[in-house]
Structure formats: C-alpha cells, structure tokens
Amino acid sequence: MDPILTVVRQFRVISSRQLEYVRAVARELHFTRAAEALRIAQPALSQQIRKLERQLGVALFERNNHRVRLTPAGAALLDHAERILSDLAAVEEEMLGWATGARGRIHLGSAHGLTVRLARLLTAFGDAYPAVEVELREMTSAEQIDDLHAGRLDAATAALSSRVDDVRLASHPLGEEPLVLITASTGPLAGERRMPVAALDGLDLIAYPSGSVVWETILSALAAAGARPRLRMETRDYTTARALAGLGAASAIVPRSIAEEPGRPVHVVRLEPEPVWGPVLVWSAIRRPGPALAAFLDFATRSSELTVGG
Image 1 (cartoon, one colour):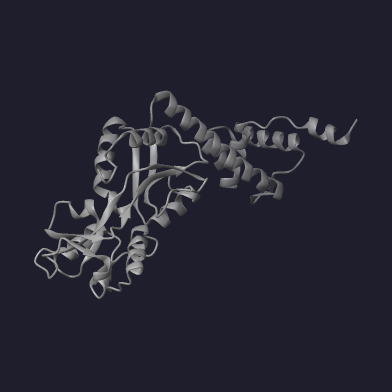
Image 2 (cartoon, one colour; image 1 turned 180 degrees about the horizontal axis):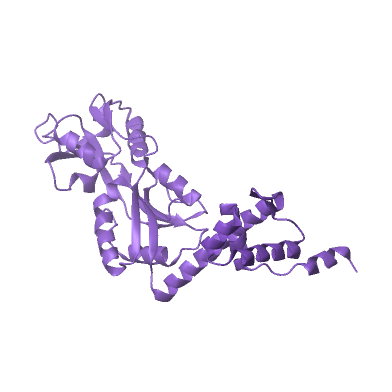
C-alpha cells in the first residue's frame, strides 16, 4: 500500500471541540486553568489532548512539572484553530441573523458633505432595524476606499472623482450637485450672484485636506481657470468651513446642500464653469454581506434620503 495513503488514513476528522481544547491550553499554558475555563475536569482535558496528539502523530505541547509550552506543530495547529473557530463563530452569528432578523454591527464611512442626509437615513434605518448597530466614521474618500479594501469598513458614502471602476467594489450612485462659493453675507462679494472661477485668483480661501475628492475637484477647476487663491486655513469639516466663511475669516467652496443648511447666514455665489461632486454608496464586491449589511444596503439604495442634487 502507498505509504502516503497509510498516513492519511490514520488521520481522523478533527472536531471543533478538540480545537477549543488546544486553544484553551495554548492560552493558559496550564492544564488546570484551561480545564476550569472549559468547565471540564483537568484529567479529562489532558486525556483529550493526548488523544489528539496520538491521532495526529505529533506532540502539540511540551510538559514538565514547571511549565507547559507549545511545540512548533502545536503553534501551527493553533493558527488553524483560531481561524477555524473564528469562522465557525461568524457562521453561527450570520445564520442567527438570517433566522431571527438583521442584527449586528455595521462599520460605515461617511463623506463630510452627506452628514445631515446620512443622519436622517440612519434614524429611519434604526427605527426599521433596532437590532443593528452602526459605527459611523467621518473620513476622506481616499481613507474610506483604503478601509473598504482592508475590511475595516463595511460600506461608505464616498465622493469619487469618476465612476467606480474598481472591480473589488460595488456601488450605487447618489446623484450630483454643484460646488458653490460661500462668503460672509456682508462681505465684498455679497453683491455677486455668479462669478467665473478665474475671478477667485488672490481670494482668501479655506482648503480641505489631501485625499478629499471634493478638494481635488476644486483644485482642478482652479488650475483650469488659472486662478491661485490664498489658502488661509484648512479643515476636514464643511460645517466648520461654512461657519468660518459666515464670519468672514475666508471664503469657502462647499457642496450646495451644505450652503443651504440652517446656521449662520452665508452669501452663495454660483461658479462658472460649475464644479460638481457626485457621492456614491460603495461596499465590497468580494465579501458577501451579512444580514445587517444586506439590510442596510437594501434600505439605503431604496431611500432618497442620501441622494444629492434633488
């Protein structure tokens, strides 16, 4: 008989319970404490570990009167055990969600220009799905895309300079709206209704951080018009930019919906040619959404709350 087949036939299926025993001993490096954590008798645990070692034909732990430690084979098995047990727990949680209704936590990235709209959507979503928690993170579009790829975000409302052509991402467009100039209601531009982008040359302007697609859109429009404003300060938040502009600290270019929000009065100037931004809802096209994320994506894509430009 083929010796390889002989070895394979000596192996039996390793159970999840056996993997839990290995993990517990590896964590505690003490059989008595591991048995207490598992709520079984210490002799029974020792017997199960020896049985598994015989089954695999390798020692998983080095034991003496003073300490217990993993062997290289034990460390390799522990890596697999951690991953398998984590996957099993995820399967159980997902199946529970499908069986009992959407529940769990969603990590959601937010474009700064959609804060108010997203708040209204999440309020309605929370009423419809009270067992789903949403962790909201305000980030630049570049940060959101990086975190989506890394699995740190489940979905994001991002501003993208062009259509989403990354095959790793699925997307749903949220419309387009113009970017407008806002200034103090009593400032030198208070009489203007429209002005060319070229006229912004030398104007005191509030900047946004690198990685902001809205800022990249603004810079592109300025460069095309040959305008070089004075960048007086920088903020990540459009609401802060709006407040500063309203006080006359500097002008700002923001999404029109931000300019129209309640708050300190600002004067709105339409730009020519008019730069626009187009937010999208994006999520991984590779990872299958669980019940909570699937419920959110269905709710968000059916709702008009997030759509700009309407």
